[in-house]
Image 1 (tube, helix red, strand yellow):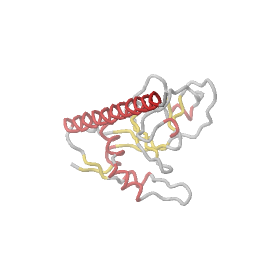
Image 2 (cartoon, rainbow, N blue to C red; image 1 turned 90 degrees about the vertical axis):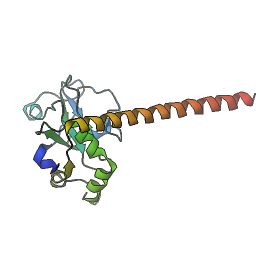
Image 3 (cartoon, rainbow, N blue to C red; image 1 turned 45 degrees about the vertical axis):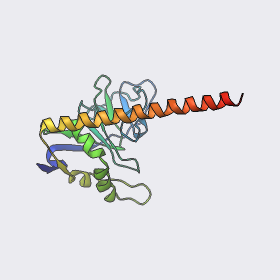
Image 4 (spheres, one colour; image 1 turned 120 degrees about the vertical axis):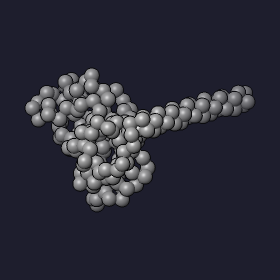
Length: 185
């Protein structure tokens, strides 16, 4: 089955706010994520509780899509321990169809083919941006839940393999460099 994103989700923009020290809510910005949409740092609450902020608090399973600039990615919000809101750099995608896993949709949005389709439709002269309308009309293949889970397992294993290979390469490089230094003595 295939459908468009607007049929299975709600999409809203993030909120504009000014971070402060020692807040109560985390203000998620694109700088908090790496190019794969994974958090790269520990987050600290940096917004106060206000009415305009409360209605934008993320729910577990929400997907953040960075639509501005050259670094477009989707990130799956899984941490509901500390309340958080997304900045205006993001669209917040909330699934309304329970036959789609948030992880699967995140994987699909980050897939190179999907990224190419979205980037081809980005507009803007100084900062390219993917519009809500373009995102809403994105066609999504929806396999059954078992296949979605399988896709996610394979994807996670592949990412783990890449990280392990990178660790091996780093260790190998360290070893070689240490041996070369020893050889100079």
